[in-house]
Length: 98
Image (cartoon, rainbow, N blue to C red; front, top):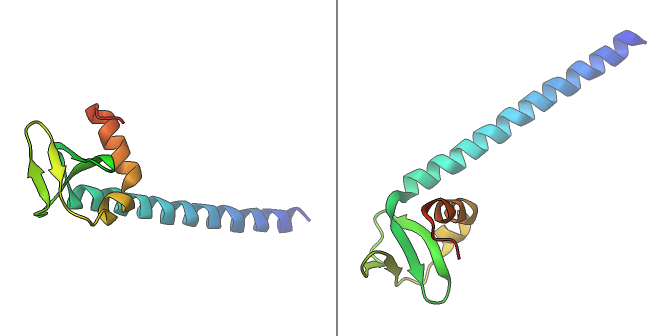
């Protein structure tokens, strides 16, 4: 009886470790792509309708410099929606919380 419980526990631990590794890799890819997609050392981007958005998107022609912050003139907010948790964390760290 002890051997059956031990085997079941080994399978459960193996699955838990594998699930943890998959989730960790997914999170690291999410953070890595955020750093690759956004200029994390740039000024904050703001839009009149949506407020503070986050850092500037790399190679984006819809961001206009208006002084100490950037203004987003585009209509596609999908990148900011996809990375909303990291953008909000970035805004909080930079002192631009809304």
